[in-house]
Image (tube, rainbow, N blue to C red; front, side, top):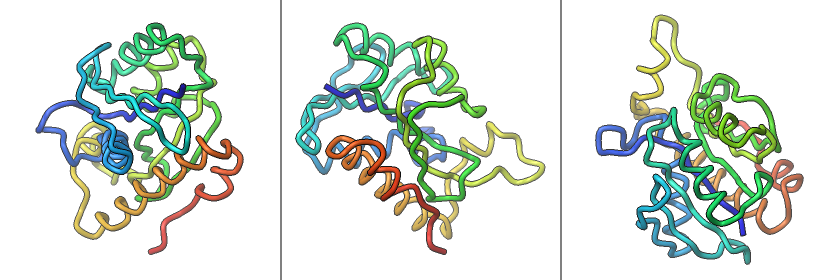
Length: 190
């Protein structure tokens, strides 16, 4: 079984913000594979089903971004899931809007949700799918930027990025991370 975690912040106030891209990819997967992500357990919304022939748990932590590791760790402990079987999907300011990047492991790169997951898991060795939200403009506070919505011009780019992230997830589950990297690590077409 794989645990697929989408990072974001709960509540209407944060819907559609850059920091909620992970939640939105989970929603796309849930819709496509008819998985209900509505059970409130382990400090998150959770649902189980199958994607690409693999049994999965979809998780949207409800702890707010900076405490995401609490929910992830509880689910891993309860279901006895190894870190290598966790895939985290989240926003990345170092990638252009809509670009996707898969990594097998690595640092938090300044992302507080990932930092908290690494702290709770005691390892940075878990696969992740990053979706680019673009670099924060000069003069902006990072928190204000990640909690802002996408511009009309960026909406098609981020939609294609979320679709590519779901494709990456499907390939990772079916054929492994190397094939997913080769096929989906990409920059968006302008």
